[in-house]
Length: 130
Image 1 (tube, rainbow, N blue to C red):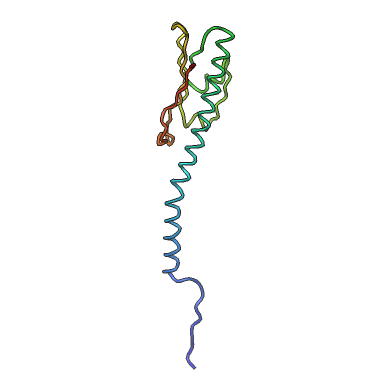
Image 2 (cartoon, one colour):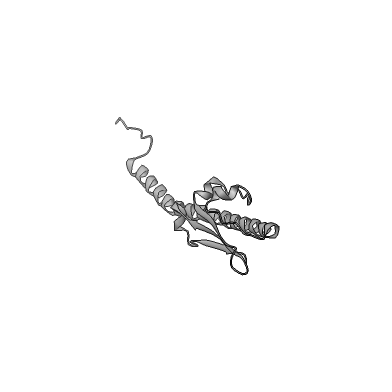
């Protein structure tokens, strides 16, 4: 009676096919995941722009002047008091440029993408008093 060896486990070919399938799925899924992260940050930045614009308009009603700010940290302080999340301020550079000399006074709030967010298709977003 010949001795038959009982096979257990996977062959190297089966493991390599499984690894190849997982790699293909990851190559498709990871860019889609990154795109969704960029979209989420973009929406949050748009909400922050609207909040800053609303605070600027309220400040104009109160003091008849807009306020220029050069960073998200400066926007968190008085008089605007707009808190921009840390992960959002690392993805965008926020600034407000006010011109109180012009008739009528104007402001422009800008969110410029930086780092990984620079690959976003929208690019720099702005909102003004109009």
